[in-house]
Length: 412
Figure: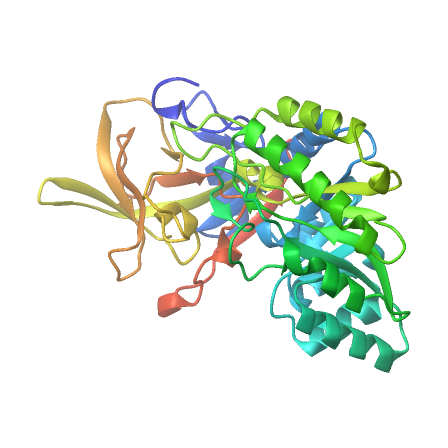
């Protein structure tokens, strides 16, 4: 695509009338089927393509897990489950969703700080793999396993002494609520050497949303070295190592897509030099947004068009209560526009507009001074990169507006 549509992610197009095509059909047709806007559409064909590409790039034998928090839509989970080796969850609700989607419990990893006793119990009863995040959590999980007469399947999550350089969100290095500091890991692992625990190995997640293949490769190599250093403290041997994820997607014009092949080649070299302590270890990569973000689009309808102090505002029936990340209010340091387009028409004289939602707050801005095809009341606005951290990562109940609709579609 060229011109105003140059930033539309691959997989979307226009028909002869200039209407945005999603999974081969005009966006308006999907809205008609759904009954109203706002509407999230997720193209499963694009998700399958991305999973296939990741599989091809990763070294043979490396497992691929999907992080459910990126998008827990039930239909999407059911479609992804047969294509990956496991799901990673971070709550009892996500655990239930993973199991309902058909993922076997033994292939579900449960991480996250602050697990309540009932969540620990649910995971142990189900047979999921618990990532232990602290000495206190280890003690609570051990007591629960003993009371149930069950052997808990566990990993120790380690807060590494390094971070994933250039990450959008840093989850390792320094003071973090996630995992046990590497220096304290041997003592916690010693406390976990109990018959009520089946200690499978380690979990290390240094950061997320990274577009630098070299930085990801460095973090993966450092993770393998850290696991090898901790291996003598693991009861039995390190049978499983979750390497984390961190693969980023290009949200903004200056972003360049991650060189997936380079990441895979570097990991292949790292694993070819696997230390003897990890000779029998199964490795896994945990990806969320990288698998689903670019497959999603958020559609909202323009309900008003107005000028204020020389600025054109396009007011939609959507907003930050559905798509918080696009407004820059989900932890962005600098507010930048997600890819956005008029889904109802293309061509004509372009205009610069600020696209806002329907909420009574100045924070509700889907795009700031963006160039669009001339847009009228009733047109659809498409906000791309909406497949991850959309509806369920947004304050949906704020101001009492109805929830957005969601549809899983398939252009395959």
